[in-house]
Amino acid sequence: MENDIKEILLSEEQLKNIVNDLGAQISKDYAGKELILVSVLKGSVVFMGDLMRAIKVPCYIDFMSVSSYGSGTTSSGVVKIIKDLDTNVIEGKNLLIVEDILDSGRTLNYLKQYLGTRNPESIKICTLLDKPDRRDPNLKEKLVADYAGALIPDAFVVGYGLDYDEKYRNLPYVGILKPSVYGGE
Ligand code: IMP
Ligand code: MG
Image 1 (cartoon, rainbow, N blue to C red):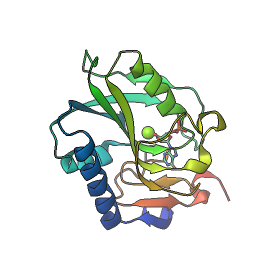
Image 2 (image 1 turned 30 degrees about the vertical axis):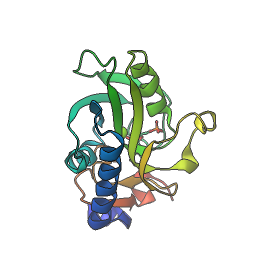
Image 3 (image 1 turned 90 degrees about the vertical axis):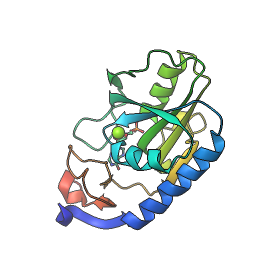
Image 4 (image 1 turned 135 degrees about the horizontal axis):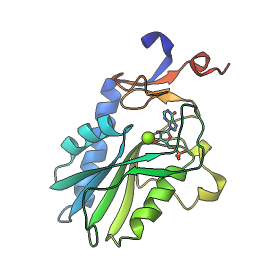
């Protein structure tokens, strides 16, 4: 597994600091509010587990599963809901969508609109990683992460929950995958 990694982008130590900073900011911003963390499966589970423990205000958690990627490395643009929220009523609640990575932005744009129809008080986005260079030109202004752990270059990364073809999620750091693994140069 380690042999397929070209370069470590964020070490365990760096990830810890990033997540603690995000947790502190979120705790401040949501003080006194009813907060529901919505983790997007499966990529965000590791981040979610650490982030929720860095948040010092009471919060609920829920999970959604959507598919936007097959086994390749580029977004199809087609988003399918595989698992919806367990929470029945989100009207009047503050939702914070927790994502592993914001790439083209199509997945989160869809999710935000989808959940928005149920009249929550607010919907914000917390992503561990953001690849701004990859954003769909139509979403450039429309979709911004309210909280982003780190801006990263246009490279395919794995680890700390992120996968390639369902592999590498258990690496404790975020690393750039060798392009030879997915048939690139
Ligand atoms: P988007 O709809 O193009 O923004 O796709 C976002 C989803 O694509 C993320 O939730 C990831 O599952 C996946 N993704 C995008 N870039 C990467 C990457 O570099 N490594 C692993 N998964 C990625
Ligand atoms: Mg994902």
